[in-house]
Image (cartoon, rainbow, N blue to C red; front, side, top):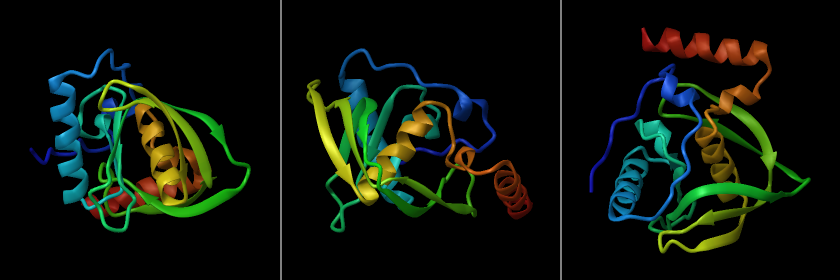
Length: 165
């Protein structure tokens, strides 16, 4: 397993929609393992492949208290979302040192292909739901701060640039 480096924002790969995964191969399984190691080293509760420069629709999420419960998702799609919202401070290692509070659906049902190559539908709640939605945004070429107003987004990006020196 390997901890992979994050690509820095504004790398264009972070704005490029990722390609669908066509099959669960040994290379995909190894990449997922690397992504879990990278997520744990952050430490974080989720990671999408584009964050490490791989433009495939792959993500991992582990919002468990004990860790070691990572869910591997290929080609995830939200098929249902609750009307109830949940607020959470979101950030990204691709733009370190800044964060913003976002409101997202508190529960989502997601269809994806798992590490066995099986099509799965699973309901995620709370922080799990927030993280899955955050990762799906990355797979579409969107960053969390794209969900902010233009004024708030511009302030966040200026603050990040100032911190970077």
